[in-house]
Amino acid sequence: MYDLYKPEKPAGLMDFVKAAKSCIKEVTPADLEKMQQEKPDLMLLDVRESAEHQETGHIKHATFVPRGLLEAAADPSYPKRLQELVDARERPVVCYCATGGRSAMAAAVLQMMGFKEVYSLAGGFGGWVDAGKPVAREASY
Image 1 (cartoon, rainbow, N blue to C red):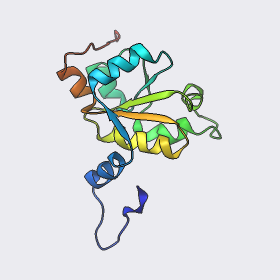
Image 2 (image 1 turned 90 degrees about the vertical axis):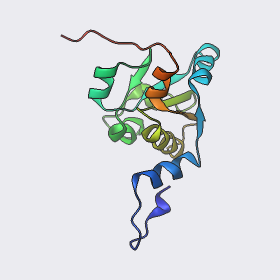
Image 3 (image 1 turned 180 degrees about the vertical axis):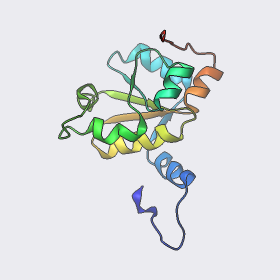
Image 4 (image 1 turned 60 degrees about the vertical axis):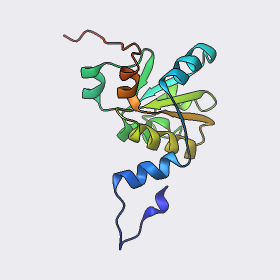
């Protein structure tokens, strides 16, 4: 994925998303619901920003790790790692963001970091909502 660097032709966001999607698996909202029923050890990873997570809700039981913090949170040698994520290396993990681009890049990075079964939610949280799937919201004060 990081072999896109060519000084004469800088890469754009969609170049990174395309590269990530070429090496990861995507699941649909229906696939994810089925996985939630069949794989009790599934980790659902919300990689959106804090404001997105709070304002629009999230998929129930999702672990929140913003995309910008993912590598640090998933690195077992990093002092401020998220142990729950580090311990999920052998579990199925489904990443999601707003539309599916950041989650594709997150899934690719987790694969590079040694996670064995990683997916990205096609269409992201927006696709989940458009499919009429349930959204969790916590009260904020």
